[in-house]
Length: 316
Image 1 (tube, rainbow, N blue to C red):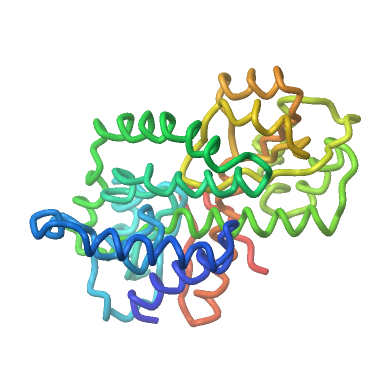
Image 2: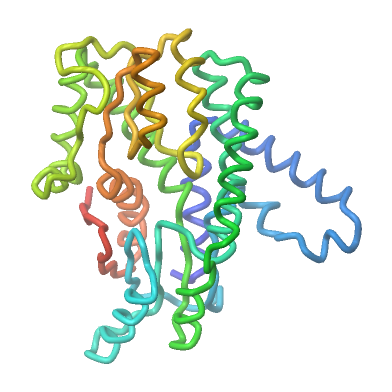
């Protein structure tokens, strides 16, 4: 596969598994195109044209010729300078690495991570929160995340990869969409009745089974095993954690249990206050599941995948 085909496949699969539905995603792209047309010439010079065809600002090719044929990819959840050096060392030892793929974004992908958080507004609306309320509670949180990303050394790993001649890309929200949709369908099929059963069913999946062995598996952080789970909301996409105000809003809907990758203490306290059960499925395991669903397709197309940096590689 060519580098551009790998990238396009990630975007395509992300759109097809987007919780908003593909029609809504296409509407968002059309809206973005109209916004671009209204920009001044100076603003257009600064505009990332990928936004016109890719709705996920955290998924980008940072380095490499898009026409380059890729045979072997080194893939991990966090690919920093150490992992770039690992790619170079593997190449020196005879395993030539053509492409480094990180799940968590670098460069512009991390700098503009906040842009994908608007996805959460539509998800909350689907769950029964009025869209004006969803947008209202997300706006300050998106601003908070944007400001928090400003001081980062965004290009550190990319600069290292550039010096060593590696192609480098990230696949974030598409993979998170994949795991979100996969687990939503999984729970709809399994129909757990209690929070404990939610955890048990998660542990039947190999990524979570492996994570459990090292103490990083699914855990109930709010609620108890015997409590009825009610409607399950798989909250695993949209950039990063949303507004802590969502728990109050969700308590008026059918949502009884949230299954998430991780949760802050502030968010946990809000969940407790509003009697919403929370299962932390595990960060690396959940990210791995989402990436694996995409990586399987790469391997079907002849790409050799070498897993590292927290990626629990499981083939389906």
